[in-house]
Amino acid sequence: MSERSIFVDHQTSEDPRMAELLLFHHIQGLTEGVEALAEDLRADGHVVHVPDLYDGRVFDSIEEGFAHARATGFDALRERGAAAADGLGDDLVYAGLSFGVTIAQRLAQTRPGARGALLLHSCLPVSEFGGSWPEGVPVQIHGMADDEFFEEDLPAARELAEAHPGAELFVYPGDQHLFTDRSLEAYDADAAALVTRRVRAFLAQR
Image (spheres, rainbow, N blue to C red):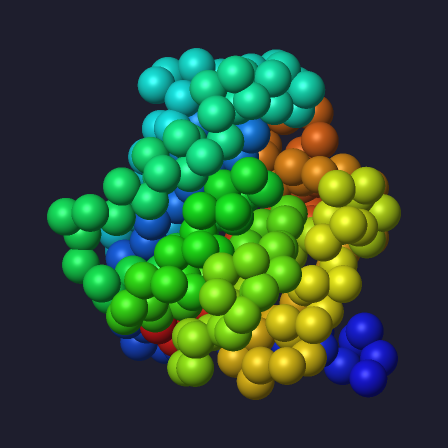
């Protein structure tokens, strides 16, 4: 199967249903760019919850964010993220950016009732969370081809996309990691706009 054969683009429905999302920020924190993405989706009428796992702290680099996460404890942060789903309904789309994918993917695979998953800049092996992707749960995966972090995840992303009919993998030219965050130097406006368009189409079908 060629890479291009798993690149599927959907058109937005003329009468989209509104989705409820639980969106987890990346390793640098709840940046203005993450908040802007949430606002874009809210403008479409979706309900978007964006828990702040860092209690207001935002970091200027991936390295600084990683150091903070390591000091806090990755497992503690993931449990904090999972707890954000408590009190919400089961009928959710789980979305994450980079580190946030580790929480979103776990919830999508293990919490009953998921309507979908959006995995931006990362994808873990399905075996990390029980060995199988839940039947009937669609997923989109987005990343840049030459991103050193996403390159490590590509085998898992391809395996998921090829094994499940509701899975889509989109790989963009470039080497930036957090290219969808408009508040960071890594931002790629053209690629980010395409991600947003595809995400909107995905949500319109949920």
